[in-house]
Length: 88
Image (cartoon, rainbow, N blue to C red; front, side, top):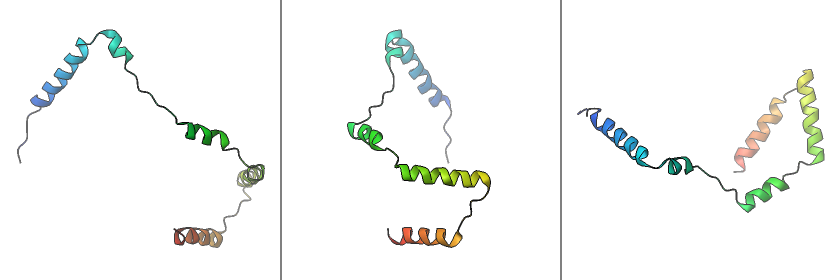
């Protein structure tokens, strides 16, 4: 196995650094990442209103967990997991 010296990696780094220093200050500062969210994604975000019945159930579950009265039903959980994986 041949191991190459780090000299070539340093040369590439120096070359890139030199090119960046040559750019006018405005061009370096002007480069920014940007993200565009599609109209379909925006529509989805707005239409995801939580159903009041679901919100109530979530609040009940949170209260049970905080009180320490929530019980995990292992059989029911296992059955739902099995149904999920078998239906795929």
